[in-house]
Image 1 (cartoon, rainbow, N blue to C red):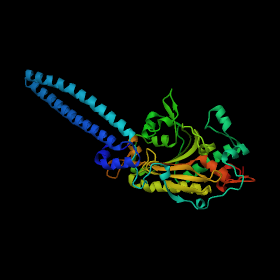
Image 2 (image 1 turned 45 degrees about the horizontal axis):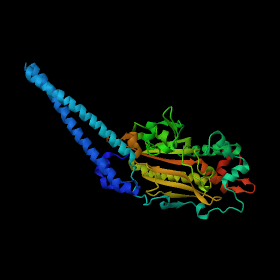
Image 3 (image 1 turned 90 degrees about the horizontal axis):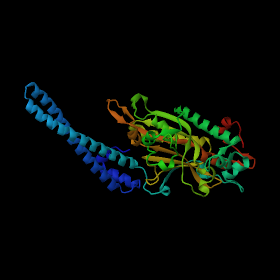
Image 4 (image 1 turned 180 degrees about the horizontal axis):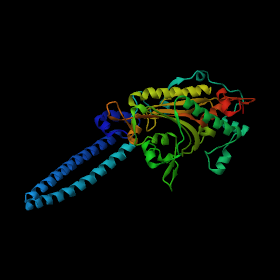
Length: 426
């Protein structure tokens, strides 16, 4: 959530950033917000004056009573009663103004970093890096199969069983498919721990406060599964519960940076659509993901963001997958993010790029909602910066591994996975 003081002091900059993010009617929304804030501040000033006058009268009444001036004291008591009524009215108005301001602020996205390119859609994203393998994309031999055919051929994932017990988008992993899934999870976690991340195993349901704190609510309410009887949401990513560990926390400077990694299943009620781009593992309602989260001082966050991107790239290199990195445009970047890089791997059988990771810097946007702060060297309380990234999401990684490594003899796994899987070929 943007800070109201920042918007007030940087109105034109805020409107410009919101336009870049393709936010609807930014001028009107910001004008209404600031007009409401002016009324709130006027009400606050009046209430402060009423309270000051009421306190002064109380002291004056005490002096008059001691001096035996009862009639004058009684007259002031009448004024006190009037002031109490007015103070109550002003407090109620102030609470309503603050509630309305918060509701508007919840609807306003984070401002994009200056490096975010202009653009309305994913077509406007900038390719900023291509791996060595991406510059010489693999060509499949005649008869190469997409992963949704390979999984049937080798009987390692069953979508029909998933539909039978749950519904579309909930696959059942079997045999070497299940073992490969587990191998990838363990590989991702071990790599993160080597890189200094502390492993967390969080709950996979969160309450409403947690959803609001990290910005999933109210922005993505329709995409989240909701357990109505308990008022809980199934998580769309481990970012939500892990970041919420630090809600309402003031960290010590020496505790920073915080580096956490967590593996969880993730749940998303994505709108149904048809076509090769969503077939098989390309889009699921439930999928596994290893997530990295960092919390750092503002002056360090963009260096941290680059290090997180470098880390994700190192995993893809070890998996021997061709990949590229895109800087998302203003119209494609998420509600929460100030800057986001997407990682895409190339699927040779589908002849298309598949997104497997997003690494985002939220600056103070989440921290302001979370009330996540630290005390600097001068003892002043400051908001922190939060960052997160997929490292990695499994379905499309698995799809690319199956498709790119298929041979007439079977699917040959990258060497780094052999010890984790316990086998080299499917």
